[in-house]
Image (tube, rainbow, N blue to C red; front, side, top):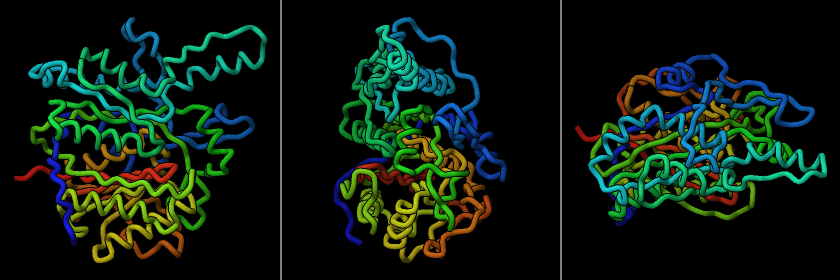
Length: 398
């Protein structure tokens, strides 16, 4: 294999938190992923005349936010602040050693606070009285700026919105910021919340599953939408789990469909391996993008067969448990991979349904037991327009 000579230093994941349909802590997440219990729920209020399965976060969000964030107040922001509250004390103590201008925030989202303005738009359409729309809460850049103001940091703060690769790209961007010595610590991740815009958009594309999605399944018929908040504090210091590398590509094949041969996916995975200076056989687990659409799953397995042709990598999709969390998908799935590396005794099983005959032959995780310790995991995120990224996480050297 030809190695990529680009020098990229691994960065440590110092603290992390994630909220989703899997729960609000690591114990709930591990139980939800390894049990046969259904974690999705049915909703009737998102698409007129249709009940849909979604990956909803059903626990409480924080009720009070600072006055200076009121203009950006939304469920999306409260979701982010609730996740942050799980690690806020640790983050503030850790970052006190750095100048505020060396502390950065990079977030990924695709929905921002759109859900909070949907009732206002509906009211405007139903009655002639002018409605006041607070645009700030739904601006894509609002999330990162609000978190920056909340933490009282003065470094770079921006949001990446590249659909389903947003959060993973935010993590990669955070690593680059640290490698370029433009920051000493970076809060990265992604947050997306359920909203009618995205549900109805995927309905119009005929991409929503009629039931609970079955990635790579024989009868797969589409996705379930989910919501999640995943946050990570990265720094140059070693940590139990390191973000080793990312591989990105842009195949630009179609506005909403991947290249059928998975060319962009192959390039992203291979780039991540090259930058980390690893072989395919070094990867102990691969979290598939695995959306459960006919085209995505078919192309991703072709890509896996190309990159991992000589390595029977254990793989699974976790979207039948979380739903597709869009701009936050890369964050919740990176968090799952991080927890696998920390625990070293379980892997998230693939769904138990019948697989597509054309996609069998892979080492799908069928039982949660991890037979031997692993050091490296990969997580794939592929988005509309061909925006692809693969992350590699690894345990720190002994």
